[in-house]
Length: 632
Image (cartoon, rainbow, N blue to C red; front, side, top):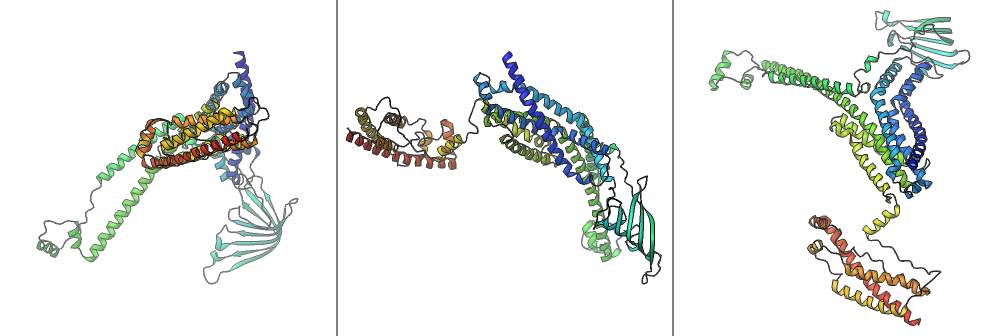
């Protein structure tokens, strides 16, 4: 127990330092992404340091749950990659400690991290979201700080356009100033041109005090003119002119109650209560709309009928009258009036029901937003545990530490998770999927992957061994390796050439008899192929005898004989029979004709190739027999 306890401390200590480092790195990356979206709300507003500190703090707190899964994934990959690279993981397994026992202390720690993530999302997160978005809305409503650029028109002041050709940043003096005042309307613009000037903010920061020197002012007097043809204007030349412009640059915090209905500002209990209340309201409104539809009667159009109309209807032997007969008996003016009234009634009904439909859809969307946020608090917390079961075994399989391969693998896995999670969220939010299905899609996809990697790593399986996949592909495609025989530097026992000659002759005779018996070049029976449930033991025995002779002859000192041994083929002894070891899978493949035909022609091709291999065995055996006899 003491050894395991020290090992647990070692594993946790190795993981914890990396986890803290990767967490702050991930948090910084997410904060930069978040700030990049709202950089326009911060620049040029003259915000106080206290406001900026609050903004950065609340944004960091709200991004903690999103940073934890990626930090866990990256830290676990690096930790177990370091263990594998330094052969520490190999030493632990050699001591009889399985991977799950090595991961056991970290599983407890990650479960604690999941609890912290859930606490942040359910308790701290809603408060931070309210503060953060209240700050953002307040920043958007704040007027920008006055910083007039050179050479361009500045329109941040309502009703004014300012142009400054050059300015002295030390003294604040502006040169070649042009001001367009549109406060009285575009047609009554006031234009001021001055050689120089200076702007100062009043003490209450609600007005600008403008000093202008050596210039002219032009004013359009159309508002005072009664004639539209002759529009007078006023021109004024001045040596010094002072004016006040309204400009409020104070920062005022909006009321936090504007975020009270947002799903992000609620914990799970409030979210569930909001969903229940909105569902009850939606059901009540829906029932009222349903009753209203049922109570709508048929709009009857009853224009006054004349005696002549009644006589016409009686002459047509009509029993009573309906809408169509009434409409046909109306005059042209009455018909126009009826059509106009009907069109107006239908338009009003359409607008009314479009508005009601919009209300129902908006309420349903709000319900889905609250439901997705409720599920997101659980799934994002579980993502930490799932990413650990992906990162830890994957690091043990890759056995590469540092910030190279683990970072690449982490980014790829997180991108896959991000795409799946966002797709499920949008499908659930828009009502295309059931809410729980969309929000749990990423968990349903990645959890089996974590279980698979943990199982493979715990059993030391070659999951990411490229040679294993290459060999599998060669096996499926029918690509064989070539035999390579080299002369041994030390030979203990020489081959018994006299006995080997007889074995080779007997091998050739048995191979020839097997080929005549099996008739390998002939197409196999399609139905018998799937029904026969036995292996071809005869070719297995022939292959074993050939390999035993090759192994014994590899002790020869003759280079010519070694080169001749390379001509023996490597025979896949099971490729020319049924494809699966399980009987019912062969039956199923045969019944499903497209798959059955694929395997049928593949088996036929392997039978033809086996015939060629047998011919090559016979030929090579005869050549080796000749070489042995000539060297005696």
